[in-house]
Amino acid sequence: MPDNSWLPIPKENIIKERFAKTKPIMTPSEAVVESSRCIFCHDAPCINACPTSIDIPMFIRQIMTKNTTGAAKTIFTQNILGKSCGQVCPTSVLCEGACVYHDLNEKPIDIGRLQAYATESAIDKNIRFFEKGKSTGKKVAIIGAGPAGIACAHELTVLGHEVTIFEANKKPGGLNTYGVAPYKFSNEDASKELKYISEIGFKIKTNSPVKEVKKLEKEFDAIFIGTGLGSSRKINIPGENLKGVFGATEFIHNLRAKELKVSVGKNVIVIGGGNTAIDAAVESSLLGANVTIIYRRSEKEQSAYNFEVEHAKKHNVKFMYLTSPVEILGKGNITGVKCIRNKLKKSEIIPQKGSEFVVSCDMLIKASGQKKMVEFFNSISKIKLGNGKIIVNKDFQTTNPKYFAGGDCINGGKEVVNAVANGRDAAHGIDKFLIKNKRK
Image 1 (cartoon, rainbow, N blue to C red):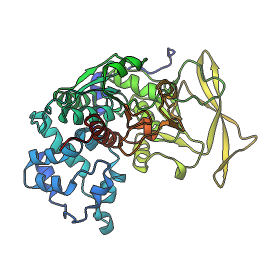
Image 2: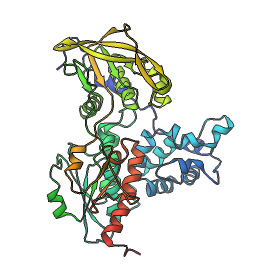
Image 3: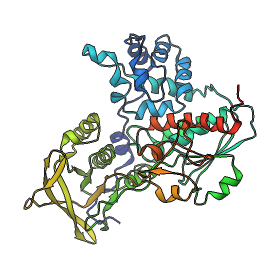
Image 4: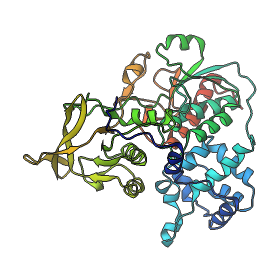
């Protein structure tokens, strides 16, 4: 529990103002004007840059001609979570990053916001493009209701299979519900999108962690694993168990679960250099804290996207590079972090003796990556792992033929859109396995 020096929870109106969307939904006139900028490249590098291969020039042309419903269908055909991906994808390094306007030193087409505009319109009007397929008599279990599991469930349902998703958390959605920064995609957004997708007819059982797979193996004809990653990794320094020390994954999960109504320390240290570290830092700053990110390497080597780093700087997050924590200080509650300066020799980090110093803080967030769920994977017969990740073939089938997998549990942690692509394609692998190539 925090001590009395922590900041009070901001009032609801202040929270709404501070956590307002960084990419608000376009108006119809804004969408038409922006779509008219597209030159509709014949080779469309933006399509190749999208992990779900959405026909981007097609849906932009449809928006330009005011066929918003057609645009939504084009998007959803390839990516049923097109709304969330339009808002949470790092578009500046994917589709927009490939836009030919960069070659002309011009601003790229705002593809993400156009995608969010079209899909939100269809969801708000409850316009549906897919229906449950003719029953095959086959049953599929999905472990995890994150983007990979939801995409897989929807595609399997369209193909006519009976699908049940087992989700450990109180709400489905995975990363979109519990892991994405709320100024990108809110709880309301996540809930609305999930309702729209799931009404096609698959089941979601929440508060249902899978601890024993034998029962599922008897009841279902195939099983898809979309568990994502586990809890935050330890940083293995003294004082890690002091009060006021949190894992970034758990901090963000708690923030989303409590609708942003959480208290933070006045002075917060975030350890790490990835996008999760940035999200935790910005969220803490928006709640009123003075925030510093400590990263052991240089800014150039930071794995967070440049636009995320700039976003953090705009929200008064400070950065301390070439610095490593060596001890968390305090008695009961955290009072500070003892650090050491580093030098780099090629890629090797060399701590500098005698450079130790202390940074005062009353809260520390560890964003040093997440554990892989190796113990659970090892409980499943004949599944092979590589570096803690599930090994799959081109059909996303594991070395146990009855099991398929996709998302972070096979790639170690990528974007929502990668998980969606995995889940969608795995559904076709499962379909091929279940009906033995008899589908026309």
